[in-house]
Amino acid sequence: MEKRFIYADNAATTKVSDAVLNAMLPYFNEQYGNASSIYGMGRNAKRDLEVSREKVAKALSCDPKEIYFTSCGSEADNWAIKGVCERLAPRGKKHIITSVFEHHAVLHTCEALERQGFEVTYISIDENGIINLDELKNAIREDTAIVSIMYANNEIGTIQPIKEIAEICQEHDVIFHTDAVQAIGSVEINVKELGVDLLALSGHKIHAPKGVGALYIRKGLVLPNFIHGGAQERNKRGGTENIPAIVGLGVAMEEVTTGIPQRVENVTKLRNKLIDGILEIPHTRLNGDREKRLCGNCNISIEGIEGESILLMLDMYGICASSGSACTSGSLDPSHVMLSLGLSHEIAHGSVRFSISDETTEQDIDYILEVMPKIVNRLREMSPLWEKIIEAEG
Amino acid sequence: MLYTDKVLDHFTNPRNVGELEDADGIGEVGNAKCGDIMKMYIKVKDGIITDVRFKTFGCGAAVATSSIATELIVGKSIDDALKLSNKAVVEALDGLPPSKVHCSVLAEQAIKSAVTDYYTRQGIDPIPIVGEVGDCDACHH
Image 1 (tube, rainbow over the protein chains, first blue to last red):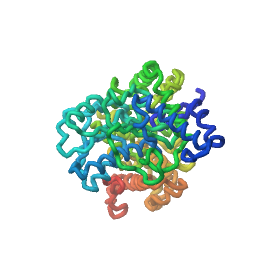
Image 2 (cartoon, helix red, strand yellow):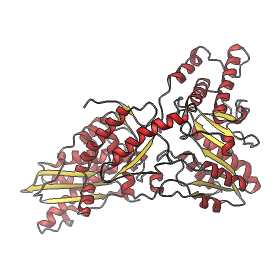
Image 3 (tube, helix red, strand yellow):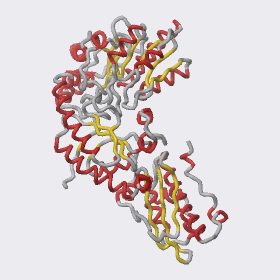
Protein backbone atom coordinates (compact mmCIF):
# COMPACT_ATOMS: atom_id res chain seq x y z
CA MET A 1 0.00 0.00 0.00
CA GLU A 2 1.40 3.34 -1.03
CA LYS A 3 1.55 5.94 1.73
CA ARG A 4 -0.59 8.97 0.95
CA PHE A 5 -1.17 12.35 2.54
CA ILE A 6 -4.76 12.98 3.56
CA TYR A 7 -5.87 16.06 5.41
CA ALA A 8 -9.00 15.14 7.37
CA ASP A 9 -8.85 17.80 10.06
CA ASN A 10 -10.76 20.65 8.43
CA ALA A 11 -12.61 21.41 11.66
CA ALA A 12 -9.21 22.34 13.13
CA THR A 13 -8.16 24.52 10.24
CA THR A 14 -8.28 24.53 6.45
CA LYS A 15 -6.00 25.07 3.50
CA VAL A 16 -6.13 28.60 2.10
CA SER A 17 -7.88 28.33 -1.28
CA ASP A 18 -6.13 29.41 -4.46
CA ALA A 19 -8.63 32.21 -5.07
CA VAL A 20 -8.17 33.50 -1.53
CA LEU A 21 -4.38 33.37 -1.73
CA ASN A 22 -4.28 35.12 -5.09
CA ALA A 23 -6.62 37.83 -3.88
CA MET A 24 -4.47 38.41 -0.79
CA LEU A 25 -1.00 38.48 -2.32
CA PRO A 26 -0.96 42.04 -3.75
CA TYR A 27 -1.80 43.47 -0.32
CA PHE A 28 1.50 42.35 1.18
CA ASN A 29 3.98 44.19 -0.99
CA GLU A 30 2.09 46.11 -3.68
CA GLN A 31 -1.04 47.55 -2.10
CA TYR A 32 0.30 47.67 1.42
CA GLY A 33 -1.18 51.02 2.43
CA ASN A 34 -2.79 51.72 5.77
CA ALA A 35 -6.55 52.02 5.34
CA SER A 36 -6.47 55.16 7.50
CA SER A 37 -4.01 57.01 5.23
CA ILE A 38 -5.09 59.87 3.02
CA TYR A 39 -3.10 59.12 -0.15
CA GLY A 40 -4.13 56.85 -2.99
CA MET A 41 -2.71 53.59 -1.66
CA GLY A 42 -4.38 54.19 1.70
CA ARG A 43 -7.69 55.02 0.05
CA ASN A 44 -7.42 51.84 -2.03
CA ALA A 45 -6.90 49.81 1.12
CA LYS A 46 -9.97 51.44 2.69
CA ARG A 47 -12.00 50.76 -0.44
CA ASP A 48 -10.98 47.10 -0.55
CA LEU A 49 -11.63 46.73 3.17
CA GLU A 50 -15.19 47.91 2.58
CA VAL A 51 -15.59 45.68 -0.48
CA SER A 52 -14.66 42.75 1.72
CA ARG A 53 -17.16 43.86 4.37
CA GLU A 54 -19.84 43.93 1.68
CA LYS A 55 -18.93 40.39 0.65
CA VAL A 56 -19.18 39.09 4.20
CA ALA A 57 -22.46 40.94 4.70
CA LYS A 58 -23.89 39.56 1.48
CA ALA A 59 -22.92 36.02 2.50
CA LEU A 60 -24.91 36.45 5.73
CA SER A 61 -27.71 38.55 4.15
CA CYS A 62 -27.14 41.57 6.34
CA ASP A 63 -26.03 45.18 6.01
CA PRO A 64 -22.24 45.80 5.74
CA LYS A 65 -22.56 48.17 8.70
CA GLU A 66 -23.45 45.16 10.81
CA ILE A 67 -20.10 43.41 10.14
CA TYR A 68 -17.04 44.04 12.31
CA PHE A 69 -13.71 42.42 11.52
CA THR A 70 -11.78 40.79 14.35
CA SER A 71 -8.56 38.82 14.66
CA CYS A 72 -10.31 35.46 15.08
CA GLY A 73 -13.52 33.69 16.03
CA SER A 74 -12.55 33.61 19.70
CA GLU A 75 -12.22 37.40 19.75
CA ALA A 76 -15.66 37.73 18.19
CA ASP A 77 -17.14 35.44 20.86
CA ASN A 78 -15.38 37.36 23.62
CA TRP A 79 -16.58 40.70 22.31
CA ALA A 80 -20.18 39.53 21.88
CA ILE A 81 -20.60 38.02 25.33
CA LYS A 82 -18.50 40.44 27.39
CA GLY A 83 -19.91 43.38 25.47
CA VAL A 84 -23.54 42.49 26.11
CA CYS A 85 -22.81 41.71 29.76
CA GLU A 86 -20.98 44.98 30.30
CA ARG A 87 -23.83 46.89 28.67
CA LEU A 88 -26.67 45.19 30.53
CA ALA A 89 -25.15 44.65 33.98
CA PRO A 90 -25.99 48.20 35.12
CA ARG A 91 -29.64 47.38 34.39
CA GLY A 92 -29.41 44.44 36.76
CA LYS A 93 -29.07 41.81 34.04
CA LYS A 94 -26.32 39.58 35.31
CA HIS A 95 -27.38 36.16 34.10
CA ILE A 96 -25.94 34.26 31.11
CA ILE A 97 -27.27 31.13 29.45
CA THR A 98 -25.01 28.92 27.38
CA SER A 99 -24.59 25.21 26.76
CA VAL A 100 -22.28 22.63 28.30
CA PHE A 101 -20.56 21.78 25.03
CA GLU A 102 -19.62 25.22 23.70
CA HIS A 103 -16.17 25.99 22.36
CA HIS A 104 -13.75 27.20 25.03
CA ALA A 105 -13.90 30.69 23.52
CA VAL A 106 -17.45 30.87 24.89
CA LEU A 107 -17.14 28.62 27.96
CA HIS A 108 -14.04 30.29 29.35
CA THR A 109 -15.48 33.74 28.64
CA CYS A 110 -18.55 32.79 30.66
CA GLU A 111 -16.37 31.40 33.44
CA ALA A 112 -14.40 34.65 33.53
CA LEU A 113 -17.67 36.56 33.85
CA GLU A 114 -18.77 34.19 36.62
CA ARG A 115 -15.72 35.26 38.57
CA GLN A 116 -16.86 38.85 38.08
CA GLY A 117 -20.22 38.14 39.66
CA PHE A 118 -22.33 37.00 36.71
CA GLU A 119 -24.38 33.86 37.06
CA VAL A 120 -24.22 31.28 34.29
CA THR A 121 -26.71 28.50 33.47
CA TYR A 122 -25.31 25.70 31.33
CA ILE A 123 -27.96 23.98 29.19
CA SER A 124 -27.40 20.25 28.76
CA ILE A 125 -27.42 18.34 25.50
CA ASP A 126 -29.17 15.07 24.75
CA GLU A 127 -27.34 11.85 23.88
CA ASN A 128 -27.32 12.91 20.23
CA GLY A 129 -25.62 16.22 20.95
CA ILE A 130 -28.61 18.55 20.48
CA ILE A 131 -29.49 21.11 23.14
CA ASN A 132 -32.70 20.79 25.08
CA LEU A 133 -35.06 23.65 24.12
CA ASP A 134 -37.40 23.19 27.09
CA GLU A 135 -34.46 23.45 29.42
CA LEU A 136 -33.49 26.68 27.66
CA LYS A 137 -37.02 28.13 28.01
CA ASN A 138 -37.08 27.31 31.69
CA ALA A 139 -33.64 28.81 32.25
CA ILE A 140 -34.54 32.29 30.98
CA ARG A 141 -35.07 34.76 33.80
CA GLU A 142 -35.91 38.42 34.23
CA ASP A 143 -32.23 39.18 34.65
CA THR A 144 -30.93 37.11 31.71
CA ALA A 145 -28.61 39.29 29.65
CA ILE A 146 -27.60 36.92 26.87
CA VAL A 147 -28.04 33.44 25.48
CA SER A 148 -25.01 32.02 23.65
CA ILE A 149 -25.47 28.72 21.84
CA MET A 150 -23.17 27.47 19.10
CA TYR A 151 -24.54 26.91 15.61
CA ALA A 152 -22.70 23.62 15.17
CA ASN A 153 -20.39 21.80 17.51
CA ASN A 154 -16.72 21.63 16.61
CA GLU A 155 -16.09 18.09 17.82
CA ILE A 156 -19.23 16.14 16.99
CA GLY A 157 -20.59 18.47 14.29
CA THR A 158 -24.17 18.52 15.56
CA ILE A 159 -26.26 21.39 14.21
CA GLN A 160 -28.39 23.19 16.78
CA PRO A 161 -31.96 24.51 16.30
CA ILE A 162 -30.78 28.11 16.00
CA LYS A 163 -34.01 29.54 14.55
CA GLU A 164 -36.07 28.06 17.39
CA ILE A 165 -33.60 29.35 19.96
CA ALA A 166 -33.74 32.81 18.39
CA GLU A 167 -37.57 32.75 18.58
CA ILE A 168 -37.47 31.80 22.24
CA CYS A 169 -35.01 34.61 22.93
CA GLN A 170 -37.13 37.15 21.04
CA GLU A 171 -40.24 36.12 22.99
CA HIS A 172 -38.37 36.81 26.19
CA ASP A 173 -36.55 39.86 24.90
CA VAL A 174 -33.13 38.33 25.49
CA ILE A 175 -30.11 38.88 23.27
CA PHE A 176 -28.96 35.82 21.36
CA HIS A 177 -25.38 35.18 20.25
CA THR A 178 -24.28 32.20 18.20
CA ASP A 179 -20.76 30.95 17.54
CA ALA A 180 -21.11 29.95 13.89
CA VAL A 181 -17.42 29.25 13.32
CA GLN A 182 -18.02 25.64 12.27
CA ALA A 183 -21.29 26.18 10.46
CA ILE A 184 -20.31 28.74 7.84
CA GLY A 185 -20.22 27.12 4.43
CA SER A 186 -22.05 23.99 5.56
CA VAL A 187 -25.37 25.63 6.37
CA GLU A 188 -27.17 28.44 4.52
CA ILE A 189 -27.19 31.37 6.91
CA ASN A 190 -29.46 34.39 6.64
CA VAL A 191 -29.06 36.25 9.92
CA LYS A 192 -32.28 38.21 9.40
CA GLU A 193 -34.40 35.12 8.83
CA LEU A 194 -32.67 33.36 11.69
CA GLY A 195 -33.26 36.24 14.06
CA VAL A 196 -29.88 36.13 15.78
CA ASP A 197 -28.48 39.32 17.36
CA LEU A 198 -24.82 38.38 17.24
CA LEU A 199 -22.91 35.84 15.17
CA ALA A 200 -19.21 34.98 15.31
CA LEU A 201 -17.22 33.52 12.43
CA SER A 202 -13.62 32.68 11.67
CA GLY A 203 -11.57 32.83 8.48
CA HIS A 204 -9.27 29.86 8.80
CA LYS A 205 -12.10 27.34 9.05
CA ILE A 206 -13.35 28.34 5.60
CA HIS A 207 -10.17 28.44 3.51
CA ALA A 208 -9.19 32.00 4.46
CA PRO A 209 -5.98 32.51 6.48
CA LYS A 210 -5.55 32.32 10.25
CA GLY A 211 -5.77 35.62 12.10
CA VAL A 212 -9.05 36.99 10.87
CA GLY A 213 -12.66 36.65 11.97
CA ALA A 214 -15.80 38.72 12.10
CA LEU A 215 -18.69 39.53 14.36
CA TYR A 216 -22.17 40.30 13.08
CA ILE A 217 -23.82 42.83 15.39
CA ARG A 218 -27.49 43.43 14.58
CA LYS A 219 -28.31 47.05 13.82
CA GLY A 220 -29.75 48.69 16.91
CA LEU A 221 -27.63 46.64 19.27
CA VAL A 222 -24.75 48.76 20.57
CA LEU A 223 -21.77 47.01 22.12
CA PRO A 224 -18.99 48.74 24.04
CA ASN A 225 -15.71 49.23 22.20
CA PHE A 226 -13.60 46.10 22.37
CA ILE A 227 -10.12 47.41 21.64
CA HIS A 228 -9.45 51.03 22.58
CA GLY A 229 -7.30 52.70 19.99
CA GLY A 230 -7.80 54.29 16.61
CA ALA A 231 -11.01 54.82 14.71
CA GLN A 232 -10.94 51.46 12.94
CA GLU A 233 -14.12 49.39 12.70
CA ARG A 234 -16.22 52.48 13.37
CA ASN A 235 -14.31 53.22 16.56
CA LYS A 236 -15.31 49.90 18.03
CA ARG A 237 -12.13 47.93 17.56
CA GLY A 238 -8.87 49.81 17.31
CA GLY A 239 -5.81 48.42 15.56
CA THR A 240 -4.68 48.75 11.95
CA GLU A 241 -6.82 46.48 9.83
CA ASN A 242 -5.26 43.24 8.59
CA ILE A 243 -6.13 44.06 4.99
CA PRO A 244 -4.64 40.96 3.30
CA ALA A 245 -6.48 38.62 5.69
CA ILE A 246 -9.71 40.64 5.52
CA VAL A 247 -9.59 40.56 1.71
CA GLY A 248 -9.03 36.80 1.99
CA LEU A 249 -12.00 36.43 4.31
CA GLY A 250 -14.25 38.29 1.89
CA VAL A 251 -13.29 36.00 -0.99
CA ALA A 252 -13.61 32.90 1.20
CA MET A 253 -17.10 33.90 2.39
CA GLU A 254 -18.14 34.36 -1.22
CA GLU A 255 -16.69 30.98 -2.16
CA VAL A 256 -18.07 28.89 0.68
CA THR A 257 -21.56 30.35 0.66
CA THR A 258 -21.94 29.67 -3.06
CA GLY A 259 -23.38 26.30 -4.06
CA ILE A 260 -23.89 25.04 -0.52
CA PRO A 261 -26.63 22.46 -1.30
CA GLN A 262 -24.54 20.70 -3.96
CA ARG A 263 -21.40 20.73 -1.83
CA VAL A 264 -23.25 19.44 1.22
CA GLU A 265 -24.72 16.63 -0.88
CA ASN A 266 -21.33 15.60 -2.26
CA VAL A 267 -19.44 15.80 1.02
CA THR A 268 -22.24 14.05 2.94
CA LYS A 269 -22.06 11.10 0.54
CA LEU A 270 -18.35 10.65 1.21
CA ARG A 271 -18.76 11.32 4.92
CA ASN A 272 -21.47 8.63 5.20
CA LYS A 273 -19.22 6.15 3.44
CA LEU A 274 -16.52 6.95 5.98
CA ILE A 275 -18.89 6.62 8.95
CA ASP A 276 -20.41 3.35 7.72
CA GLY A 277 -16.99 1.95 6.90
CA ILE A 278 -15.50 2.67 10.32
CA LEU A 279 -18.64 1.47 12.12
CA GLU A 280 -18.03 -1.95 10.55
CA ILE A 281 -15.21 -2.31 13.06
CA PRO A 282 -16.78 -4.02 16.10
CA HIS A 283 -17.24 -2.03 19.32
CA THR A 284 -17.41 1.40 17.74
CA ARG A 285 -20.07 4.12 17.96
CA LEU A 286 -20.86 7.32 16.14
CA ASN A 287 -20.85 10.36 18.42
CA GLY A 288 -23.55 12.94 17.70
CA ASP A 289 -26.76 12.90 15.69
CA ARG A 290 -26.30 11.30 12.29
CA GLU A 291 -28.67 13.59 10.37
CA LYS A 292 -28.39 16.94 12.16
CA ARG A 293 -24.65 17.12 11.65
CA LEU A 294 -22.14 19.03 9.56
CA CYS A 295 -21.56 17.32 6.23
CA GLY A 296 -17.83 16.89 6.81
CA ASN A 297 -17.90 15.59 10.39
CA CYS A 298 -17.26 11.98 11.38
CA ASN A 299 -16.64 11.44 15.09
CA ILE A 300 -16.40 7.86 16.26
CA SER A 301 -15.45 6.23 19.55
CA ILE A 302 -13.44 3.03 19.33
CA GLU A 303 -13.54 0.86 22.42
CA GLY A 304 -10.43 -0.51 24.06
CA ILE A 305 -7.93 1.94 22.60
CA GLU A 306 -6.94 5.54 23.20
CA GLY A 307 -7.36 8.49 20.84
CA GLU A 308 -3.87 9.90 20.80
CA SER A 309 -2.42 6.51 19.88
CA ILE A 310 -4.86 6.33 16.99
CA LEU A 311 -3.77 9.79 15.81
CA LEU A 312 -0.07 8.91 15.97
CA MET A 313 -0.70 5.76 13.94
CA LEU A 314 -2.85 7.67 11.45
CA ASP A 315 -0.02 10.16 11.11
CA MET A 316 2.35 7.31 10.25
CA TYR A 317 0.01 6.52 7.36
CA GLY A 318 -0.09 10.20 6.36
CA ILE A 319 -3.59 10.91 7.67
CA CYS A 320 -4.30 14.05 9.74
CA ALA A 321 -7.20 13.75 12.19
CA SER A 322 -8.00 14.72 15.77
CA SER A 323 -9.35 13.30 19.00
CA GLY A 324 -11.22 14.27 22.15
CA SER A 325 -9.05 12.09 24.34
CA ALA A 326 -7.45 13.48 27.49
CA CYS A 327 -4.02 13.13 25.98
CA THR A 328 -4.88 15.54 23.21
CA SER A 329 -6.82 17.96 25.40
CA GLY A 330 -3.72 18.67 27.49
CA SER A 331 -5.43 17.54 30.68
CA LEU A 332 -6.26 14.22 32.27
CA ASP A 333 -9.91 14.42 31.37
CA PRO A 334 -11.33 13.70 27.95
CA SER A 335 -12.97 16.59 26.14
CA HIS A 336 -15.97 18.25 27.81
CA VAL A 337 -17.96 17.65 24.63
CA MET A 338 -17.50 13.88 24.82
CA LEU A 339 -18.37 13.82 28.51
CA SER A 340 -21.43 16.05 28.02
CA LEU A 341 -22.80 13.44 25.59
CA GLY A 342 -22.92 11.14 28.59
CA LEU A 343 -20.05 8.95 27.38
CA SER A 344 -17.95 7.14 29.96
CA HIS A 345 -14.36 8.30 30.30
CA GLU A 346 -12.98 5.20 28.60
CA ILE A 347 -15.27 5.56 25.58
CA ALA A 348 -14.49 9.29 25.39
CA HIS A 349 -10.73 8.58 25.49
CA GLY A 350 -11.11 6.48 22.36
CA SER A 351 -12.74 9.08 20.14
CA VAL A 352 -11.36 10.10 16.78
CA ARG A 353 -12.64 12.92 14.57
CA PHE A 354 -12.22 13.06 10.81
CA SER A 355 -13.43 16.33 9.28
CA ILE A 356 -13.40 16.16 5.51
CA SER A 357 -13.92 18.91 2.93
CA ASP A 358 -14.98 19.17 -0.69
CA GLU A 359 -11.37 18.48 -1.62
CA THR A 360 -11.58 15.02 -0.07
CA THR A 361 -11.86 12.29 -2.69
CA GLU A 362 -13.41 8.85 -2.71
CA GLN A 363 -9.87 7.45 -2.91
CA ASP A 364 -9.02 9.30 0.30
CA ILE A 365 -11.98 7.66 2.05
CA ASP A 366 -11.01 4.23 0.70
CA TYR A 367 -7.48 4.73 2.01
CA ILE A 368 -8.69 5.75 5.49
CA LEU A 369 -11.02 2.75 5.53
CA GLU A 370 -8.17 0.46 4.53
CA VAL A 371 -5.89 1.83 7.23
CA MET A 372 -8.28 2.14 10.17
CA PRO A 373 -8.91 -1.60 10.83
CA LYS A 374 -5.14 -2.21 10.79
CA ILE A 375 -4.56 0.53 13.34
CA VAL A 376 -7.41 -0.57 15.56
CA ASN A 377 -6.32 -4.22 15.49
CA ARG A 378 -2.75 -3.36 16.27
CA LEU A 379 -3.63 -1.12 19.22
CA ARG A 380 -6.25 -3.53 20.52
CA GLU A 381 -3.76 -6.40 20.41
CA MET A 382 -1.58 -4.56 22.89
CA SER A 383 -4.42 -3.18 25.02
CA PRO A 384 -5.18 -4.75 28.40
CA LEU A 385 -8.48 -2.84 28.35
CA TRP A 386 -9.52 -4.57 25.13
CA GLU A 387 -8.61 -7.89 26.78
CA LYS A 388 -11.09 -7.07 29.56
CA ILE A 389 -13.82 -6.05 27.10
CA ILE A 390 -13.47 -9.34 25.21
CA GLU A 391 -13.38 -11.36 28.44
CA ALA A 392 -16.52 -9.63 29.67
CA GLU A 393 -18.24 -10.63 26.45
CA GLY A 394 -17.36 -14.25 27.12
CA MET B 1 3.06 18.90 21.95
CA LEU B 2 6.29 17.41 20.78
CA TYR B 3 7.51 13.87 21.24
CA THR B 4 11.17 13.02 20.86
CA ASP B 5 12.27 10.65 18.08
CA LYS B 6 12.95 8.07 20.76
CA VAL B 7 9.35 8.23 22.03
CA LEU B 8 8.01 7.93 18.51
CA ASP B 9 10.37 5.04 17.80
CA HIS B 10 9.21 3.14 20.90
CA PHE B 11 5.58 3.90 20.08
CA THR B 12 5.96 2.78 16.47
CA ASN B 13 8.09 -0.27 17.21
CA PRO B 14 7.31 -1.21 20.79
CA ARG B 15 9.81 -3.68 22.27
CA ASN B 16 8.67 -6.73 24.20
CA VAL B 17 4.99 -6.21 23.53
CA GLY B 18 2.66 -9.11 24.33
CA GLU B 19 2.13 -11.59 27.14
CA LEU B 20 4.18 -14.28 28.89
CA GLU B 21 2.10 -17.43 29.32
CA ASP B 22 4.36 -18.79 32.08
CA ALA B 23 5.07 -15.46 33.76
CA ASP B 24 6.36 -15.54 37.33
CA GLY B 25 4.81 -12.17 38.08
CA ILE B 26 2.11 -10.03 36.47
CA GLY B 27 1.44 -6.44 37.44
CA GLU B 28 -1.24 -4.02 36.32
CA VAL B 29 -1.52 -0.32 37.11
CA GLY B 30 -3.60 2.63 35.97
CA ASN B 31 -7.25 2.65 35.03
CA ALA B 32 -9.43 3.16 32.01
CA LYS B 33 -10.97 6.33 33.42
CA CYS B 34 -7.59 8.09 33.34
CA GLY B 35 -6.88 6.68 29.94
CA ASP B 36 -3.81 4.58 30.82
CA ILE B 37 -3.51 0.92 31.81
CA MET B 38 -0.17 -0.88 31.86
CA LYS B 39 0.18 -4.59 32.36
CA MET B 40 3.62 -6.10 32.82
CA TYR B 41 4.69 -9.75 32.77
CA ILE B 42 8.06 -10.89 34.15
CA LYS B 43 9.96 -14.17 34.13
CA VAL B 44 12.44 -14.51 36.99
CA LYS B 45 15.35 -16.92 37.47
CA ASP B 46 17.80 -16.73 40.38
CA GLY B 47 16.73 -13.20 41.17
CA ILE B 48 17.28 -12.07 37.59
CA ILE B 49 14.50 -10.85 35.29
CA THR B 50 15.11 -13.09 32.30
CA ASP B 51 12.14 -12.06 30.19
CA VAL B 52 9.53 -9.35 30.19
CA ARG B 53 6.45 -8.40 28.16
CA PHE B 54 3.92 -5.61 28.37
CA LYS B 55 0.46 -4.63 27.18
CA THR B 56 -0.65 -1.01 27.38
CA PHE B 57 -3.85 0.92 26.79
CA GLY B 58 -3.02 4.58 26.51
CA CYS B 59 -1.42 7.40 24.59
CA GLY B 60 1.85 7.41 22.68
CA ALA B 61 3.85 8.21 25.81
CA ALA B 62 2.19 5.40 27.75
CA VAL B 63 3.21 2.87 25.11
CA ALA B 64 6.71 4.30 24.77
CA THR B 65 7.42 4.41 28.53
CA SER B 66 6.23 0.80 28.91
CA SER B 67 8.36 -0.29 26.01
CA ILE B 68 11.55 1.37 27.21
CA ALA B 69 10.95 0.22 30.78
CA THR B 70 10.95 -3.40 29.61
CA GLU B 71 14.29 -2.81 27.86
CA LEU B 72 15.73 -1.21 30.98
CA ILE B 73 14.91 -4.14 33.28
CA VAL B 74 15.40 -7.25 31.17
CA GLY B 75 18.53 -9.10 32.27
CA LYS B 76 18.71 -7.04 35.46
CA SER B 77 18.33 -8.27 39.01
CA ILE B 78 15.03 -7.62 40.73
CA ASP B 79 16.82 -5.24 43.08
CA ASP B 80 18.11 -3.20 40.15
CA ALA B 81 14.70 -3.24 38.47
CA LEU B 82 13.13 -1.86 41.63
CA LYS B 83 15.64 0.97 41.59
CA LEU B 84 14.46 2.10 38.15
CA SER B 85 12.94 5.52 38.65
CA ASN B 86 10.45 7.30 36.45
CA LYS B 87 13.14 9.91 35.92
CA ALA B 88 15.43 7.29 34.37
CA VAL B 89 12.57 6.27 32.08
CA VAL B 90 12.10 9.88 30.98
CA GLU B 91 15.84 10.30 30.40
CA ALA B 92 16.04 7.09 28.39
CA LEU B 93 13.39 8.52 26.08
CA ASP B 94 15.30 11.83 25.73
CA GLY B 95 12.52 13.56 27.61
CA LEU B 96 8.71 13.68 27.77
CA PRO B 97 6.31 16.63 27.53
CA PRO B 98 5.37 17.78 31.08
CA SER B 99 1.79 16.57 30.72
CA LYS B 100 3.10 13.08 29.96
CA VAL B 101 5.48 12.61 32.87
CA HIS B 102 2.76 10.68 34.73
CA CYS B 103 3.16 7.93 32.09
CA SER B 104 6.73 7.35 33.24
CA VAL B 105 5.50 7.09 36.84
CA LEU B 106 3.02 4.49 35.66
CA ALA B 107 5.83 2.50 33.98
CA GLU B 108 7.84 2.52 37.22
CA GLN B 109 4.74 1.40 39.12
CA ALA B 110 4.02 -1.35 36.60
CA ILE B 111 7.41 -2.94 37.27
CA LYS B 112 6.88 -2.70 41.03
CA SER B 113 3.44 -4.21 40.65
CA ALA B 114 4.83 -7.18 38.68
CA VAL B 115 7.58 -7.74 41.29
CA THR B 116 4.99 -7.53 44.07
CA ASP B 117 3.02 -10.29 42.35
CA TYR B 118 6.20 -12.33 41.95
CA TYR B 119 7.04 -12.15 45.66
CA THR B 120 3.44 -12.84 46.65
CA ARG B 121 3.50 -15.99 44.52
CA GLN B 122 6.76 -17.00 46.24
CA GLY B 123 5.08 -16.66 49.63
CA ILE B 124 7.24 -13.65 50.45
CA ASP B 125 5.67 -10.49 51.86
CA PRO B 126 6.42 -7.91 49.15
CA ILE B 127 5.69 -4.82 51.21
CA PRO B 128 9.05 -4.58 53.05
CA ILE B 129 10.90 -5.02 49.73
CA VAL B 130 8.76 -3.22 47.17
CA GLY B 131 6.66 -0.97 49.36
CA GLU B 132 3.08 -0.03 48.56
CA VAL B 133 2.40 0.17 44.85
CA GLY B 134 0.02 3.02 44.29
CA ASP B 135 -1.55 4.31 41.18
CA CYS B 136 0.01 7.11 39.25
CA ASP B 137 -0.35 10.18 41.46
CA ALA B 138 -1.27 12.27 38.48
CA CYS B 139 -4.35 10.16 37.99
CA HIS B 140 -5.89 11.28 41.26
CA HIS B 141 -8.27 13.90 40.06
